[in-house]
View (tube, rainbow, N blue to C red):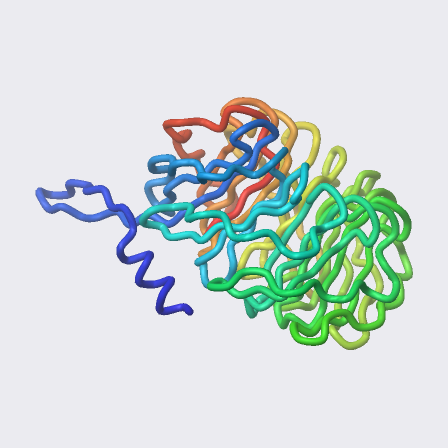
Length: 361
């Protein structure tokens, strides 16, 4: 499918930048930003050098409630949005040229409650939705052309409480769920054909509060969870076969309040936590062996309001933050060595309410 994605990217909407009399096309990919009120999802042209382009037209059938976590399939041909209100997850064909296609038919068995997090497996053959109400996570076979397959059987031991977020390891051999009740994190072997294996033993040191966001490092050697009580982020060595190792030492400078989402840069050399109070995002150097480095200097222009999500682009040279007050989304050049660059100009058409999630293709 990668060649199809490349074709779409090469044919994406372009603008011309005059440099020395020559017309150099700017090729746009996309950024998705979810929000708490209608239309619940915003899609923007995005260029790693030029920043925001035009806003895409809304999908013909909007998500049915508060937009939470968006996700692109690995091919880039589908964008999914978890949301409150049935059917709790909406998936759309996607091209960088025209944006949203006609909403894909809902799965035969819907998630059991409000969709809070969602992610495609690395192969693109599964889609997982974390939701309120047991079993806390629902996973379906996925095909970009045909959509949902029949829901996989629930895990033998379901996560405790409501599901808040879900992640696959880079190999696709593990799936982990952040949840609202102790032990706040549940991890399982995963197979795109057979589904869940037997739940891994809980980590020796549990997260200290409600799990809100979860992510594996790109190598698959670390598993991070953002949670509601200090230290607000906990990271563990991870092995697809043996599960959790002993928790890494907390960062020297903690996030200052409730951690909402956590993300690793594509290189695995940085880890970002979106949180409730200023500076609303905290980013640290990361090493899968030694853990946290010294917190990067905050951006010169901070996000405004509660940090709902922080995500890196696929190249790892941009970080964007979804937040609680206008302009609701802030994007910055990023370097794993030097940290934040100067904030990109806001999009011409802003999200209209508190933003909760971000995804790049």
